[in-house]
Amino acid sequence: MYNKMLYHSANEARGEIVGVTIMVERAIDRYLSNYFCSTDQKRQEFKELMLFSERITLDAKKEIFIAIIKMRQPAYLINNPDFLPLLTKTLPHRNIFAHLDLIHPLQLNGDDKYKLVFKKYINGKLSKREYGLKEFVKVLIDLNSISGHLLNLVEIQEKRKY
Image 1 (cartoon, rainbow, N blue to C red):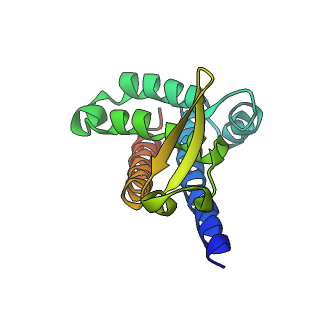
Image 2 (cartoon, rainbow, N blue to C red):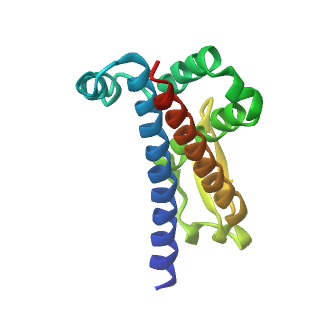
Image 3 (tube, rainbow, N blue to C red):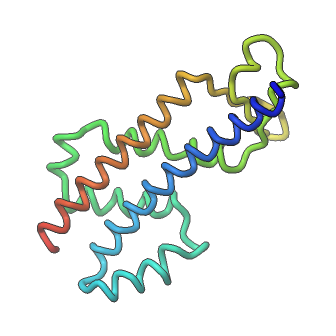
């Protein structure tokens, strides 16, 4: 029972991070489609043909978004100087939670049993990426903060209609 409960909790934690990151990505998609398209129909087509395809990654969308924000809304960045560093630092956690192998809790020792521990290979050498409860919650809080910033930026953008 303990074994199943820990593993189920780990999978739920993975789903939380991926789920919130999807909300962040959709907000970036909305911002980009508003920026590049003038009608609702074109915005929807742009999202379906470009942004929702496998060809453009979340990282690529982020880079395009950052370039536009720096050009079009520098005042927002001045008033919210932590936003872009938080965005850049936090989004890579999604790849860890979505793609790396999770070490089963029963394979861990001591306090590590109460952490999410992912296997990561760097230059052929195994390393571990650990998330304790405190770090996991911080990633979730940061992702939700990013989401709030993005929704504010979309609202500002839609009021300006540029």
